[in-house]
Image (cartoon, rainbow, N blue to C red):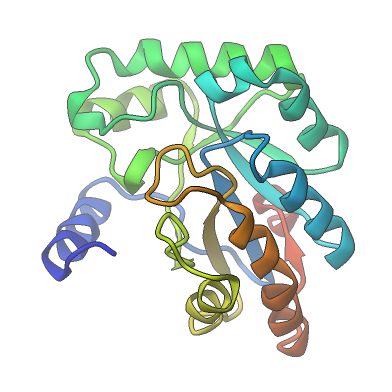
Length: 215
């Protein structure tokens, strides 16, 4: 989990470089870092079982490695958006415009989708990557709830962390790949989806993609 100081620094950065943190109503499930054979199929099955739509912020290098899986996400009715091509801190990114262009090309080739949103790795744009994002016609996106599921947490704990902030308009951050985190598998995230969906249903919150939530 980020330290308190890191959390405050991120919130200050979000104030300087603002992006979408909430939607109008309902709730949004979003998944970063995929597609990945480790857990994306299980996440898709869990979403189907829950009757939920989600938004997937894909990594270009992952799409290039698993184009059929990226296509399946789209074919199963979910929204495809852009995370990055290389999953690095944007302060370390030499050419943000090139990274966006490579990711966009990989995603469009594999899925046919043309992304309109970008969430940066670790939720932190740099000034130059934020400018590149907006100049590319992409809307910056952050979140308002998370499952801290880059750590080695079980599904119950992931769901508990999400549901404590479950309210109308929430944008939930989850991950369908363990590649850039600190756990051997992302399957606990898939196992948390039924728990999150049940809590959302109890609160009358349909789980939709970002674009569907906006009408």
